[in-house]
Amino acid sequence: NAGVMQNPRHLVRRRGQEARLRCSPMKGHSHVYWYRQLPEEGLKFMVYLQKENIIDESGMPKERFSAEFPKEGPSILRIQQVVRGDSAAYFCASSPREGRTDTQYFGPGTRLTVL
Amino acid sequence: GENVEQHPSTLSVQEGDSAVIKCTYSDSASNYFPWYKQELGKRPQLIIDIRSNVGEKKDQRIAVTLNKTAKHFSLHITETQPEDSAVYFCAASSWEYGNKLVFGAGTILRVKS
Image 1 (cartoon, each protein chain N blue to C red):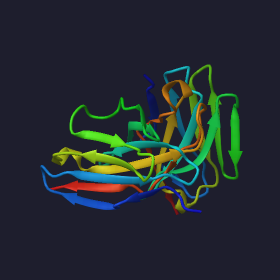
Image 2 (tube, each protein chain N blue to C red):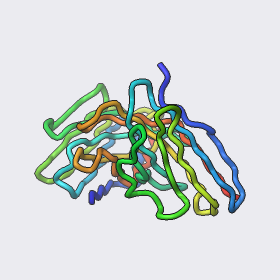
Image 3 (tube, chains in turn yellow, red):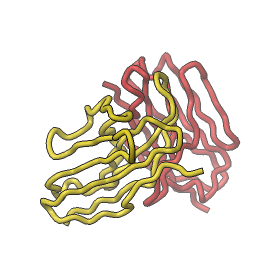
């Protein structure tokens, strides 16, 4: 009974490098949400994706951040030219059904540290 | 957009006492209200949720109440134990906004033994 998988669990990058965070939803789930948690703060919505579609990216910073959920493979959150302020825990969550409110199950998160 | 406020920010109780955390939301379109527990360095774990067609839900020592008119909902933990110590987040979502969760700022609960 595999839950939501994320990797890597910890990622260290130097300023200016790229960070790629991966999320595999629970089996049977086709909806993926990404959230960011800054140190000692709450979770903030970033983006909502279905297979091959970005549904809502209203929480994504306008520059350097992008996300995808291809037909095959995990969802990817990509951060280009990272800065120290990007240091945070990035969680993805998945849910199963379309067109109705439903429970989101969270992955273990990727903790990004920018040196 | 939706805004969720959560109180208190920290709560200390004696083991065996009850703990209550309250949240208010702004958007009447919100219809799903989950509560998550997060231990240090771990993922948020769903502990209970309630939908807008229900006023109260209970699961063993945990209960949630919802007042749609006043737009507030509360988490109640009875007979607290040291392992209940964690950060608790409330959230609200609606199908209208793609089910994205809008979280409160969190409550640090400390249960003293």
